[in-house]
Image 1 (cartoon, rainbow, N blue to C red):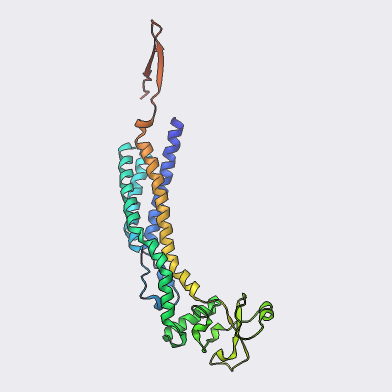
Image 2: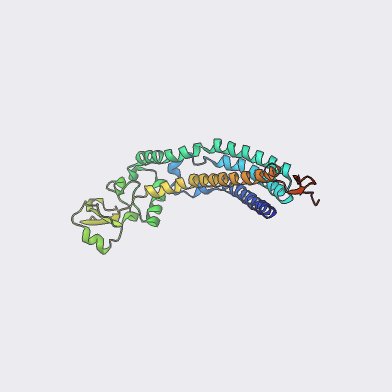
Length: 276
């Protein structure tokens, strides 16, 4: 029993340390500027990408303070403090789940809102110059073209959409306008040539649109916050269970007993005297 109790105590200390680490991570992510790394950020000014930041900024310091309390309680084996810690961390757990639950709905609505933004900004050759420049940088770096397809540029494809076809692309190309190839390049008509080039019969452009790449950039911060909150919830439940087990030890621990036989052959059971 003593060995089992020492294991539980060591495990409780480890879990509360993990809870402290999660609190530090919440503070770091809550006050960082991950959202500023989104390409063509001006496109999404009307979309709120700060959902969940306030949750991490508020509950991160609270988690750190309560975790230090839990580590001290488990290390010093202070049962009343363990119970207080369990109660406070449970209140924080419930509060965070209530406040952070809309994040899941925000993530589900993000794709629809981004698709609407893509629809409003096309055709791309009429968009603001800054948006065209930033999108061209993304097309050059990630080998993509347009937001939903290369047709978003209509008949004014930029140079960054041009692609060097592979041997398989050349074999699958049967006629201009057939862009059902699964390769990285598709063939389009020469009337879509960039203004800086002469009109040609065949023109190869990137088959992948840039829209899914932008969506991944936008959804990453929200997914990261949901992941951190989920990890916090898991660690918190483990910490509550362990600390309650140690704090309520006297109610579940079976006291050691010894048996004696009196002169009338009757067996008596009584607790063993404590060494302390």
